[in-house]
Image (tube, rainbow, N blue to C red; front, side, top):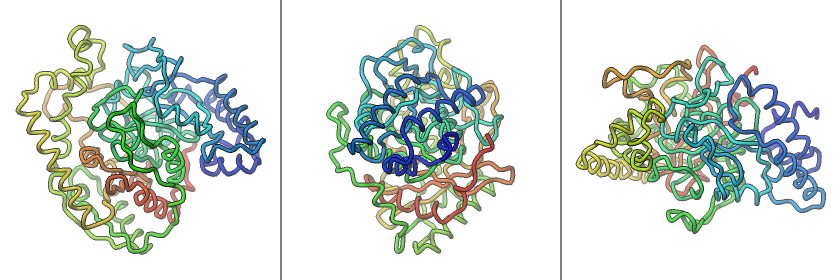
Length: 466
């Protein structure tokens, strides 16, 4: 295989080629670095490229594999990290100019876990500021590889651009209200939000701590599975980290979903927030799962229609985290966050308390639904990638909500695992994302269904012309 073709191989297939010693980790790393140098000026995916460190890690991986000391599926695989994740000795900005000179003295646990797994770090990825907005950037916004005039979605925007643009084999993002699944949907990728507590948040800049979780974006579900397996597990440095055993996610990808019960969530499909071609693609995906042996029915989660409002009511955590900055230097906070933080800082306690009660209710409704079915199905976003543009003037209540069609929030509030996987394209050639959610800590079933659907569609054969 020509070196220039290596970036177009999925992470899982690249892993198999390297384990068989048919491809060198150094070759793969060099191929990605060359592509970054060639294309990142267009995509704006990276904030920092760590070429020398990446090549050193690739050489170590090559030597270890040659000696028969394999560390597992991620050994030698080139990855990139959202710039919200601490990396020892490497600038970590959190997408903000406020932290443009911040250099952590420790690695985040997910970074330590990836290093232990033998992965090769290519660098740090662009993102929306503090990971608490969907579209507003302090740095040049990443470009969507499917159309350079369009957004990738956020907040893990660089993670979407880099993975879809073949600048890394797989990327880590962080998902609060949908920040892994949103760019996965708009960039034609697989991306999973694990169960809250499945992956350590130690060394990850906070967004909304009661929902934050790190998750991977990959070009295939299997890529997400092997990456999640490498970063998941209990961490005493994170007090909400779970002791739940981490299964072999890759082994769960059997292709067999016969008998699985799947519920299509009416409130997240039959709504004006979902465009018709998106709705039809999701319904077609449900029909495809039925053909594969799943039992598919429509179900109701009444409060899902109000998930965005509930999410807004509890998002006082970020204004508290950054209260000194908000008080003393508000103009250094980007547009969307400045508005939401100022509103959050004056929100009455009674509103916040009501938001918490409603969150508990929506979680109860999600879990009750998952008592009757194994998986929940809906669009990830109600629209395909939107055109990039300046931050709008906030002159009405409607203008305060820039991403009402992001349908990922229900499962963030419920703290259950949810996967976005491509399920079609618009007439203009933009990806559409299918969202599959499951029971707490049952990522196996979520990934198995997503993989089975993916492998029986032709979406993997399409790639952006970049």
